[in-house]
Image 1 (tube, one colour):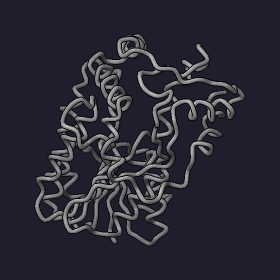
Image 2 (image 1 turned 30 degrees about the horizontal axis):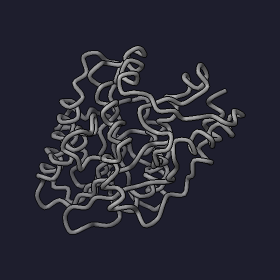
Image 3 (image 1 turned 120 degrees about the vertical axis):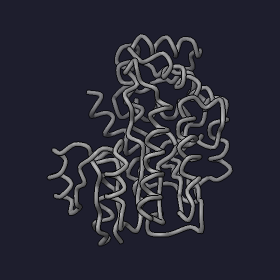
Image 4 (image 1 turned 60 degrees about the vertical axis):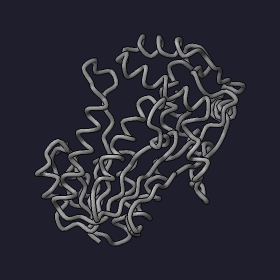
Length: 296
């Protein structure tokens, strides 16, 4: 199969590219950074250097492909001028336009847990918007991948753990948290790219289910800090902390709302209705070793 991969050599796209090439597929990786070309080619893939903002470039790159994997690259939450909804909507529209114009019939898109919600999900509303946009495509089989909380999001707590000796957020503690490794997401995407549903499909991906305190305990043991606790703080305290770190207030509010929705269980309700039959292979105990090395 000829498969197009977006996301350059990011956390998901790199292991995805490696797996697809090993399986014998002809893979083209889209990157906006010309310096990535040699690294992409070293994996056995072709490089397409261009911008996701350029619909003509996307259309040309997609044309002739059997399947395309799409994702919206992370935005800079500390950019005070960022309009996250507008950014995600624009990239979603660009993908839709390029898919329609190129005639591609198979698409796997990276969405998020909580993308089924139409309100009270904070920044996840941007993922919902992209799903709605892509679902307007006709004669295209689409899988919306909805991963849960990425392990590497835990790196955002490193400074707090060093300074205060705890993990503090407006979710966690006794809440069950669902974690996922990019490696497990990549494996699931590869499976989906090689199959084709009749029309639309949603697939959740998860690697481990643990409470916030269990998560903190595993990280603490790996770091030589046994007894590490995860404590709940008020939404207002979470908001002020994010703003103090320099985050755009609107984005901070969106994150606080998203985490509050996770705390009350609304964000993950559809996950539990459609829980994957098989969990991923990378457990938090595996990631904790990597986390501990970074903590030093």
